[in-house]
Length: 122
Image (tube, rainbow, N blue to C red; front, side, top):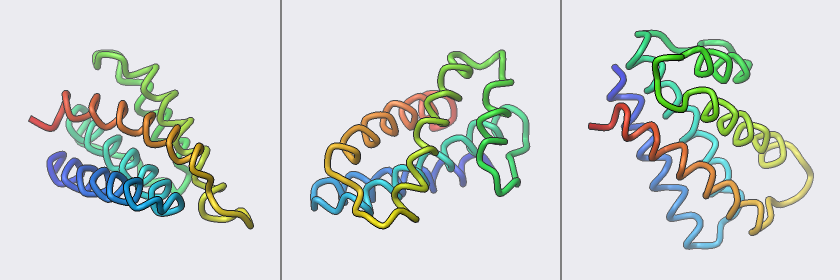
């Protein structure tokens, strides 16, 4: 089951990269957020056989931070929080997501994705 969540994360990651290359900043941002959510789900399922089903993504951040036996889980939970904070700006604000915002978000997301890949993407 963790593999299916990681596969989703990988697809969102690739879509984020393609959107970045095409300078579609809104699409890049939203794919980054979904990549991080799916990568988190993969890690949680891999280590606990459960994932957050709450509509509040803060629950996933909390659960990830509880994985004390997982290397870097606490700081990566904070990275996930930073990524998720951009979701509202991308989806609901009456403005386009800017290039610099997308670049920063893509960097955070790539680090988070690569961390998850090292844990569950084998």
